[in-house]
Length: 288
Image (cartoon, rainbow, N blue to C red; front, top):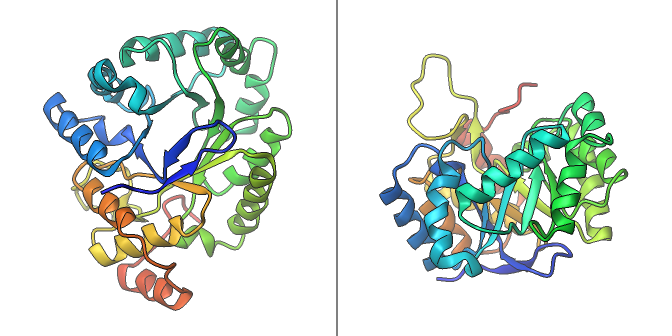
C-alpha cells in the first residue's frame, strides 16, 4: 500500500497526495494516536499538517518525531497575528512536537482583511516567521483558510508575499459554487505558475450538522459516511495531478480515505458526482 507522491510545490519535497490532517488527533489518547501513525506508515503518508488549535494533536505527534522525524514533512500553524505572539506560538509548537525544525509554518485561518493587514505590518506575524526561516527553524511559509472568500483572499496575499503553500476548501459542492469556483480557478492557476503548493480541505464534508443531531464524528461538520461517496470524492479531488487532499479530522473515517487514495481510478464524471451529491444530500458547510 503506497499512496502516490507529488512535488509539494517548489519546496523540493515529494509529499503523499493525502496529507494527514492532525485535527483528527485533538481528542484521542496516545495509544489511538500511535495506531494512527502505524496506518500512515502502512500507506506511505509522509506529510503531517497540525496546529496548536487542534487540541492535543501536537502533543500526540511529539513522540512520533522521536523516532520518525526524517520520515515526515512536518507542518504546523500560528493563529496569532502579531510578531511576539507568532514567535511564541512557533517555539511552543517546536517544544510540543519535540523537534528543532518545521518543514512548513502556516498562518492559520488568514481570512479577514484586518488580520491580513496586521500580519504584514512591521510588528506582524509574518516578520516572526521570516526570522524563523532565516534561523533555520522553519523551511517554508504558507497560509490557510476556510470560507467562500478565502480563495480570493489568498490571491491578494500571494501578491504581497511569495508564500510557499496555501490551503483552501475544495470538493464537488465548492466546484459548483458560482462565486467560489472562479476565485479557486484563478488562485490555482497563479499557484501553478509560481510553484506554490495547493492543499485542499473538506473533500468529504457532507454538510453542517443538522439541528438537534448529536455529532457522532470528531469533525465540526458532518462528513460523508458512505464508502462509495467517500471514494468518488477522493478520486475526484486527486484527479488534479498537482493538488493535495488534507485528510478528514476523524481517526475512524481516516482508513476509508486512505484506502480510496490507494486505489485510484479515473476521475468520476459530472453525472456520477451529481448523482452522489443528490443521494447524500451534499450541502454547504460555510452558509450560503
